Image (cartoon, rainbow, N blue to C red; front, side):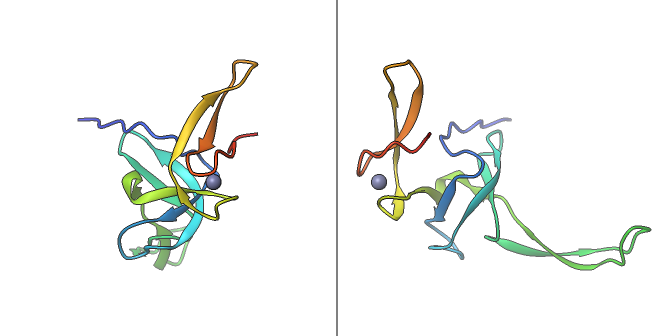
Length: 109
Ligand SMILES: [Zn+2]
């Protein structure tokens, strides 16, 4: 069954981890997996994977990012310099932009 979590987090957003082993760590979102309710954040939640030797690689231990539950991260507002909740507002030209609920800063260009 698909959960399809609705999220305002997008690729390249800076986020902060709010729970778990890497609590407080910051990174850039490299992938959003809405159907799993997860995101992959660069250099956060690293796991070691043992790989078998193949024709293309020698095998061994590879470190890579494990996906995170979206509920365990927050968007980092550059103005607040902290994890914040996001809101959405419509501009005069009809575009919708994401805003910081704390300081009101528009987070999209
Ligand atoms: Zn803010």
